[in-house]
Image 1 (cartoon, helix red, strand yellow):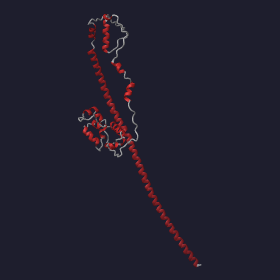
Image 2 (cartoon, helix red, strand yellow; image 1 turned 90 degrees about the vertical axis):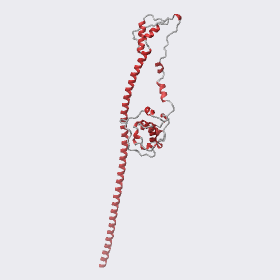
Image 3 (spheres, one colour; image 1 turned 120 degrees about the vertical axis):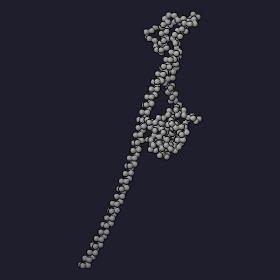
Image 4 (cartoon, one colour; image 1 turned 135 degrees about the horizontal axis):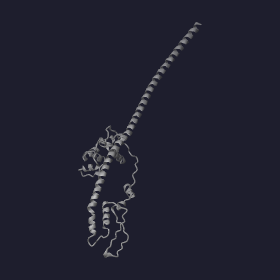
Length: 307
């Protein structure tokens, strides 16, 4: 009995030790699993945070790229309104000056008294209601039509051609009639005729090496650029204005000399601070059309919203 009890006690002790060992191993596995889970959760949370930050950054850039053109459009619109108002004032002044010149021209070249004298000289004589003829000539001089109540018939007798019968009067061609021959259809064909536009395929929309600058473009409401005529007149070199690159033309309009504009356009540096949005985008469109972005060093510094 005692021997069997001792054997049972030994077996129980061995089983307890084995169970304790297994429980210890299970506890280590659990701790290892918790540690791995914590590391995985930390890595996942960090990755989620990075993705959210990237998405927020892209959203901010996109929002900025859409907001800036809207702001520039408002500024350009105000500049164009001011320019249009100035042009309207100039046009009104030109119309007034033109009207004065026309009045002086009519008054200087057509004198009613001189015409009446001419018609009564050199074996010619005006008989009958001469005041009506003079009044008609006065109406012509003033550029106005005779009153509707006037019913005038002028008969010309030539003693040396008594039997002449020229037939019904045919109106002479006047300058206004000649100008009216240029119909809108002809003008439209002249403006929009020519070869068909080339299709844009595989266009490069950004430079291969792109490093947009934080420098802003020119504010058209505060900076006054030269007109193309003034910039062209500043040329002292034997070059043709229409043959110059558009970026050089725009730089010269920003008060640069030809040599300065040429050096700036060729340098690997930004120039967009000298151009407003309207002219900068116009230049970029031409560069993209001719697939010259990578051959234009300053293009890689232009802010992204301009593209």
